[in-house]
Amino acid sequence: MKRPTYQKKTDRIIHPQASADDIKCDIALAAFTRASEQMDKKWGIGVLVGLTGPETLARWGKAMAGLYAAEDEKDAGKVAGWAEVCVRGLAMMDAEATAAGHQPADPMIWEYEFDGITYGIIEDGRQWQAAYRKRKGLVICTMREVAIALSYHNAMVRQVKESFNGAEVTAIRKPVNDSIDDDLGELFE
View 1 (cartoon, rainbow, N blue to C red):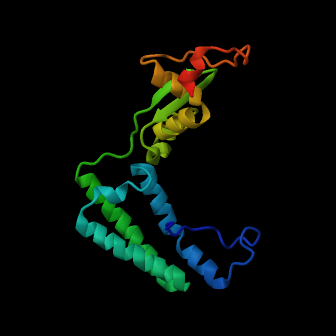
View 2: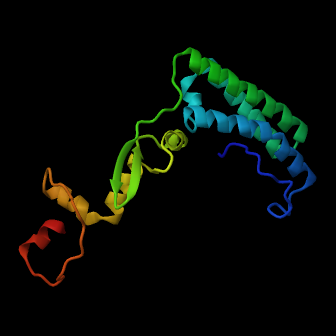
View 3: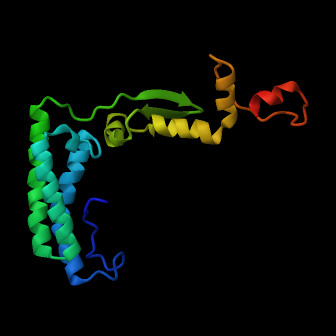
């Protein structure tokens, strides 16, 4: 379930069907959205809840459930009330995580330049915002994205790596003659 977010429903071009209640509820979410984005930037997307204790998490769950219910009811007063509770909850979780010695997102970035483009590879995709702040101008990829690209887009590279331990791919070129009939084809089937 996606977290309730301010969507600028006052804009009639983007949200022409928004009712008065939709707009009031949306505006009530603005401060919560801003606080949530600040915590995601500081700790990584969705990381903060994992840095707090069970009592705090139970209170956070209750607050979020209240916010979801109020939004479903389209009750702007309740949305505003629960959004305020959630903003306080984010501040409390932030203070708790800091007091416990947790450090804000500071991802390790492996950089490599290829064909004039500098790529930055990070382990945890939830830390992309911190990676961009740390190293502007990089094309940031996660380790998962690299694995997907290698696996899906270039099966030949994967097959070479599986067949020849320690092999290093230095270039990928199209074959000059695709009609070569040799016994190596069995290795790649």
